[in-house]
Length: 580
Image (tube, rainbow, N blue to C red; front, top):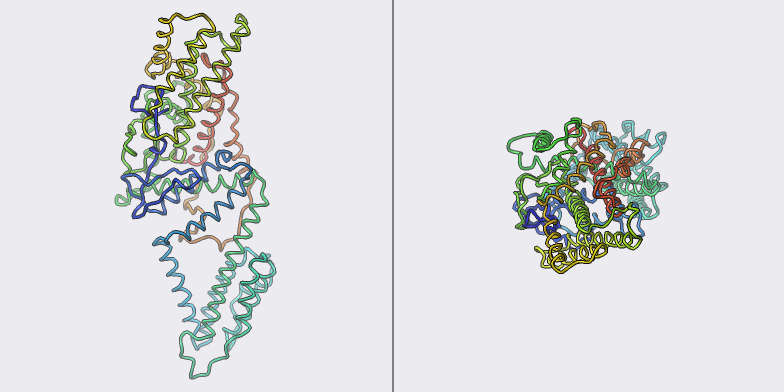
């Protein structure tokens, strides 16, 4: 409905697939067979790495799960089932795709690390072996500590330097056996076979080499110890994954939603900053500075601002100004250009980077609010009495209620098909005729119509559906003013978000997994309360009656729109409080 080539028409036809598009280098992916929402598509002039496109789409899914999971979850499924499914699905997708360059480099470096370890442990001098074993003790301690009680004797053993020995590798093999036994006591049954296999390897240690065979590199004993150690690290990672799933399963729905929201916030910030700094690497500008400047520039573009609005609420006024514009809202990363799939996106209604992951929801909300105005404008042509009128007959009141329900069903159906429509719609005239017929039928409840009067009324319907029509513009202004009053008076701005200097998003400062750290999935009461504030905002229901929108169908629709708007506002302030 919203992005027609006829910019002055309220009945605009668009294809949602023309919305945000990115392109990655070298490969082509088909998103059509994936039953999940995506924010980025491959057809665009801009080029981005494949892994960046995939990361954006995964983060967009998390974003939707955090804001409104009911729109994503399949019927009869809980959030925990979907989270686990996405985790497994991601692993399968990675296996089916050729590993990207980064993964290939990582695998090569890991293989080189273990080869070097075996080489160093083959030293004929026990003191040199102990130096390397001390480092391995530290690595093992860091990796296994999340799986053992803090006072476990094995942790104490690993925290100390290896004891002096004339055969350090054989002493280390005893420690590895103790580790495997401790892991077997705590692992899931599915891990038993892997641990038992490694225990059998340690049952057949090679004999100590004679002095003449010592120079062979790497030695058999060093190779065996290295292979068992590598297997132990893999088993530890698997056990942490098992424990992670168990902890997720023990969470309440609210705790799980808060956890999803926490992860979505972290990833969203990191990816938006990366996207907007991707094309500015040569200039060396910080991503935070780029998006902060874009936000300020966007806020200053508004030509309308209520006189009594607080400084922290200026962006809300600017956002509603964008939602009331003729052009569809869009958010384009640098270098993408101003068009997608051949449909121009006027630069005057481009959203700032902070709203990138919310832009698809804002696009739909723009359609939704315009549909509400259309319904109110059409009702004004029927001359039906107000819903609370006591002078009208019961049949007239029933007819008025039926009219609004039928009109709203038509408009909602149009909203639903936008994302599936291709092209610019040959069925627009049929839809317009349907609306005209409904208005004529409702007017006839008040008085009979002559043929000339009916034609005049049909022309009035077509005229009213133009955004330049005074009646349409007046109703839209009333709606936008009421929404602005509600979001500024009923939704207090949140405090600025305290963001760490380094955005890890689940990874260490070196880009490696933080699996070696102690697992922490506990969600505080404050985090749960913050989640509730976003997903169930207090402003819903506080919007006063709006002249021209008194009908219950319209008032309920406005509450739904206000709910979506308040969620987006709350999410934006929660994620970007320090950069807005």
